[in-house]
Amino acid sequence: MLGGVTGDWVVGYHRGMDDQPKFLVSGCVICKNNADKIARTLDSLRWCDEIVVVDSGSTDGTVGVCEGHGSGKVRVIKSGWRWFNKQREYAASACRNAWVLMLDADEECGEELRGEILGLTEEARRGVGLFKMPRKNFVMKRHVRVWGPDFQTRLVHRERVEWDARSIPEIRKVKAEFRVGKLKGAILHNRLTELQATDFNDGVKQAMYAVELAEHMRLKGKRGGWVNLFFRPWMTFLKYYVLRGAFLEGRFGLAIAYKTTIMVMLKYSVLYAEGMKGGENQETGSKEQNEHG
Image 1 (cartoon, rainbow, N blue to C red):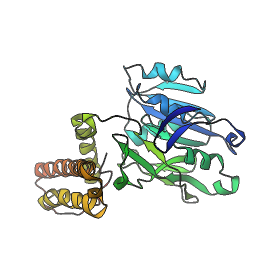
Image 2 (tube, rainbow, N blue to C red):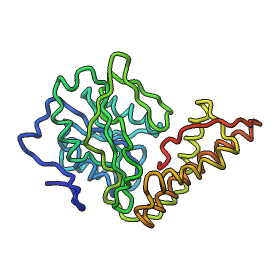
Image 3 (spheres, rainbow, N blue to C red):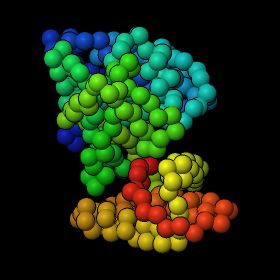
């Protein structure tokens, strides 16, 4: 078996009778400077017919790790960054199969999810444009339960979906004649990473997300008045710490609630500043989206 083990989680590739898929699936990964993590991602995709990796300028040996992967299925494409949804669309377009499972370089296809996909019959796929599945997020090797179920639309039929290039969170919609299927197995995110300062304070990444989130909201007609700027962060903290039960996880839960709150505060700060430039003074509510980044 290839892969890692932690607690009750086992992720890897097991060759057996049930590993013969009922249809061909391409795996694709978008990455940059993920040499320390991407091997686990590729291991979890060994069952795929092929693995396409789109690298947007790694300098840490990520490309070498991919090209030397033992599956012999990895094809690396070097291409500039387009933002998440557009980058995934480009990666999916480079795959040879219609069905594509899309992962980030710090994610893994869990065993249950792999089994579900391998078992999808023609009947189960008929009329489906994409399948959504939960994502289990980890910080300090601990499952962040309050962020669940964090559904992702990552198994797509390339010819049956439409892509919103600048959407945050990523939006993929099925074309009119198709529907969305649902899987129970999960994508595992950041499963084996030790505590890092950037888990709670990644200035560059947080700033990038905040600006992009604010721009997405602005394009949707949202405005960042002082009411949202003041109250949204407090509401977010109460939502995750109290209503979703982060307080039950002690210091870890408190840190997670603050991490989520900070992202919302940054997002509305940027939106508020944009409103100041234009002299706007509107108070418009909006649903938190992708708060935990």
